[in-house]
Amino acid sequence: MRRRAPVLGIGIEAARKVRSAIGYVHPTELEIEVLAYMRGALVRTAPAHGARANLLRVGERGIIAVAETLTDTERRWAIAHELGHFEAHAGISFLGLCSSTDMLPAYQASGREPEANAFAAELLMPEDLFAKRCDVAKVSWEPVHALAEEFDVSMTAAALRFISYTEERVAIVCAKNGKVLWSAGTKDFGTRPRRGDRIGEWTEMHSFFKKGRVSNKPQTVSASAWIEDIEDDEEHIVEHVFPAPRLGIATSLLWWKP
Image (cartoon, rainbow, N blue to C red; front, side):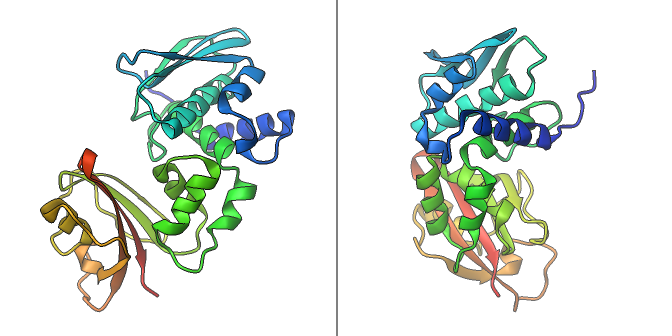
């Protein structure tokens, strides 16, 4: 059976209704477990069996089980994601299993998973608080890190939310072992690397995969190092790499140099 296309507004509106009903201002005022309980869903920790979290819903009550291996920010996002199913898909009673891919903020697919992610993003990083903080003097991982700290979310979640509201031409590219895992960007950024593409040797990220180290400051590179269909080497992109050596992963924040 063909699944319906996601309607992200369903998740966003549901998150705003939750915030309005409980009456908090900043999302860190309440622990996510307390918030879920107030909405009728009990959170418990469970052994991981191929899923980061799952929701058992029967009528107006639910149990959210979260894998014990998650970090604090991963756990918070997973609970918000499952609560999104609970709130936005209230007419359905089911045992739902959500994998790490389902809960990736950049995940795009048909069905209900993107709606649950939209709920989580709005619940944990409300637009009215988050958007105005994206007007920064200089794009880099530094303001993204500040947002992640303030809203108690991962760097990936904060970065993806950041590019939703910045007025700069920005993209994010995440790669493992020299190959692109995923990318996301503002509509006006232009062509982005595709999943499976090899990282170009003239990028800062390539230095990380080749040498195991990279500058902790933003660096200017030729736009053609990242974008295949650009022939003019006078166009430049600023690249700032956020490495995760233990995982063999690096994420580059890219923006067009004015």
